[in-house]
Length: 450
Image 1: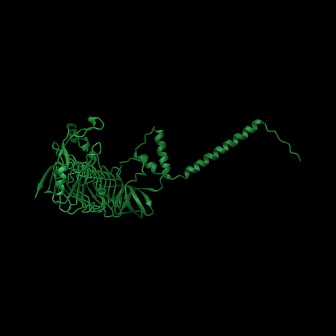
Image 2 (image 1 turned 180 degrees about the vertical axis):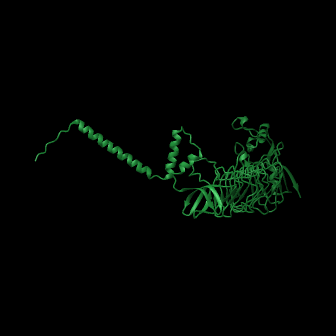
Image 3 (image 1 turned 45 degrees about the horizontal axis):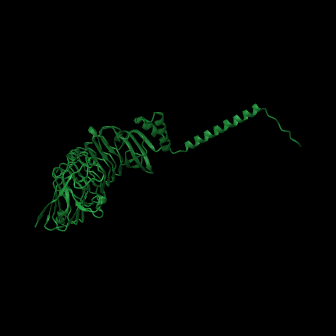
């Protein structure tokens, strides 16, 4: 049987093709919607924030309402209002689950000026306070009470971590921490200008980590004690705590003290911790710089190596001498600001043991031939013919700074370090003398005793 071909009009063919195109577009759109619906809520939130930034010309709104609307898409976040816990009323509580049975308390707004953080909530243990910076897109410096005035904070047992900015710029004057607390992250109690925390004392005995600027500008803080030998104090943790007159460090340090962590405090006396092993791993530069009331530093006896990094005692106007006790194996003293025409720092090292070695810094000239020792001290006092005395006879020091350098040193934020290849006795390798800020070198004064 022969089948005849049928000729369709051209306009009918065109209509059929158009219908197929429309159907294919609809299917494609539906597939995209299905793909989007399977995305993680956090990913959708991030994409939404990016889209908002583009539509507003790159400016992301910092309004708290925008933040809360964005968080609505995250099913892990729970919000409650007018909550009563153990007889105390809270106007607002917001938390998220970080693992089964454990929550992070993001916001907690009390009804009065006393904040008591519960140990448990809705049958889950509270282990963290504050927002996780990775999961929060709103205002960075919104504290845990969302601006509610609080004078006293009592944190329940079980809390292990306080997240960054949790209590920043708050007028709180008393904080009670639990023994369970291990980490205080950056800028937790920090403040700026008139917004600084009014804390006078706080127990940090069990804490293992104190983040950078954690107590920045807490001007009423008077004393702290760190007993955990594994504690890590990050840079600028207690910067400009001007009334902090007493700092007790662990007797033995296995953790780390980072750059400038006690800079600008009002401390008067320091007992240096015993450090074993690689001392440079545990201590960083500028720890007590600009501590203008510091008068005395006590070093432990029979320590193998005392390491004093760069700028540790810069602009400590009342600290003129460091005494190195008997039994010390070696002292490393790196660059500090000291010269005959600038004495706002340590000027003298005194050694009580004849066998203690001293090390400043070693340098070579531009031809890498003439090796010599350099130490930023005016005077060394040591037993006659001791190892420290022999070092002082050959070591060089800075005798005089230039006017430009003295002007720089008067600035609180100035941390220039000086090296012998910049001295007038060494020729310029670049020929640009103006950028070298040359100074005058001389001999260390040696006082030998019987």
